[in-house]
Amino acid sequence: MRGPLVVLGDAFLDRDIVGTSDRLCPDAPVPVVDVRTELDRPGGAALAALLTRGFAGCEVVLVTALGDDRVGARVVALLDGEVRVVPVPLGGPTPEKIRIRVAGQSLLRVDRGRAAAEPGPLGRAAQAAILGAGAVLVADYGRGVAAHPQVRELLRQVTARRPVVWDPHPRGAVPVPGARLVTPNAREAAQLTGGGSAGVRARGADLAALAAGAARLRRDWAATAVAVTMGEDGALLVLGEPEPLVVPAPVVPAGSDTCGAGDAFAAAALAGLAGGEVLSEAVAEGVRQASAFVAAGGAAAVTAVLRGRRDAGRPVPGGAADIPALLARVRSTGGTVVATGGCFDLLHPGHIATLQAARRLGDCLVVCLNSDDSVRRLKGPDRPISPEGDRAHVLSAVTGVDAVVVFDEDTPERVLAELRPDIWVKGGDYAGGELPEAELVRGWGGQTVVVPYLDGRSSTGLVTAARRGRPTP
Image 1 (cartoon, helix red, strand yellow):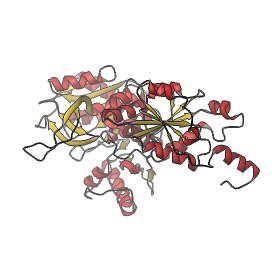
Image 2 (cartoon, helix red, strand yellow):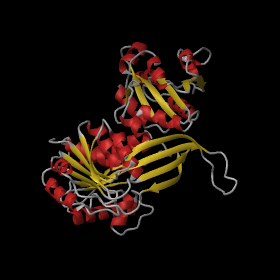
Image 3 (cartoon, one colour):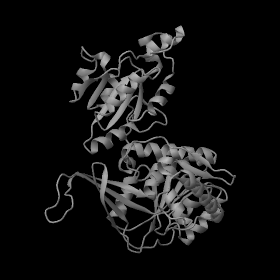
Image 4 (cartoon, helix red, strand yellow):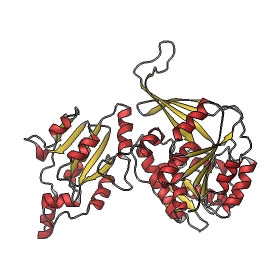
């Protein structure tokens, strides 16, 4: 890769006002929100730039239009130390979007700065940044930057020699010819092809219509490829071959905040292309990173996702969530963090019963998994049967498991001290004596509990029965 990655598009300030609500206003049937926290975060192209920095780990430059106002200064401050901002003058206020949220759900959004405001001429620094880019992400939010005549002329030169990923908007500009990858979501693709905007899913006729629409957009835009993002259904990639490539998405917790998922997908795809990945690999990485981003709390948790990470053991690569961000999201809404642990070597119904019972006790479940070395010390040199990577992958696929973390010690005290769960759960085979970790958990006000154990089910029993050639109970 030559030159920094450049994100080009419309930036704004996002603000989340988070509170609780347990009553209605006496003079109107609307909820009263008691504000607990207010969080400012970069939005639009500014969010895409921050995510690109996190995924690529290299220099990132944001070229965007900002007003000469407090909001514009706040956007720049939020990116300080992570992304270099090259501003273009904006003939009006910097846009601001305010969400009022309760219990993880948005009640209302208030927009400011929607008055017509056009970007001014590009200075030398902006022109040099675009022409010197190693790769470019255009984050078009329909506010004029991507439609700027100077911008489009510069991008025409860049597409001939560098990867350009274009995240379009129905009210935005048409991608310049030669873009390597264009990334509309399913709703946008339907709108752009005149196919409506409601009820689009990767199923049967809908999938066929999406593929046909993506192929049409690819031809109309003269793009190398079009990837239609489909939320929980993953992404559909059209390269020109007769059959599209469908990349499924990992399962994420129901009710997760999807704000910013499209930016995460485009940013991760750009990072992949800039690093030499082929289009199918870059799209697969985009799906994986967008899913992890949503599971970790989405845009509301972006600061925790990309800054101040803590190493709570070894989070599973490609797992469902960035663990510190997951915990921050749950706790920001007053939720309960639950953790359980074990070897989980040859997953069996007893394990599933424990996991399901544990998840019902709170709002997220983190599984602390003994590493291969730890299992060998506990169970002997011929264990585990399944290596830690396989065990973690299977656990991550169990409904209700939000994250998996691997630890090397015999017991998970160090990991627990970093996770600080509200509830620590063990199976009923521990009943009758105090759990080894109980005193530690009490230290931060947590509670240890035992859940019912499914009698007669154990990994050791499965291994013994298999070696004797007998059916398991």
